[in-house]
Length: 244
Image 1 (tube, rainbow, N blue to C red):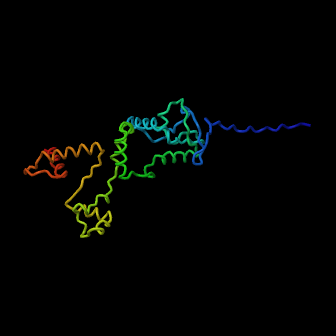
Image 2 (cartoon, one colour):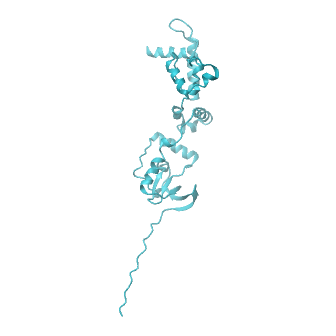
Image 3 (cartoon, rainbow, N blue to C red):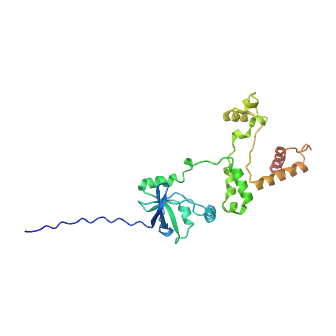
């Protein structure tokens, strides 16, 4: 009697993942990988200047890699943290947050991680923090390019107290005037003969500017030989000199 041999199906081999799981963070596995084993996303739409990269490298040298890169298990591709990993030695090991995403969701996460429209904004309190850091640890502040953040300090229109600077508030006084909406203040400002230019300066720059303006008020006079008695008049005197 002839016997038939059944062909056994070979089990598909699962590709071994690099590194090893060492724990978890926020419900996601944390995998330890050798930096040289990590493959970056070829589509990553981010770049960095040498100047910015220098600041990033200084930050990581000072504080460590405190923000973990993100790595997709399914494609074995780095999703977030490309520039940070460039600061590391290929022989070093790095702990990454492991996700398990389809290629298209991986790309969505890559973009979301750097989307400024889903992140917070600085408040005017940034200026005080920057000044404090620059005074206490100036070398680190310079190394982290913190001075460049002064341009990101917002001017809060409500904090200008326009009603206290001679600007028409429609006859309201006291609490009524201060209760006006931001839009009302803007309209009053646009109609007023008084306009403001707001400069946000580093502490060192502020001291230098006020020193120069004080010198002008002390030593100079207007074209009509009148004393210069305010910073506004000193700035106008200085501006006219440059215009000439």
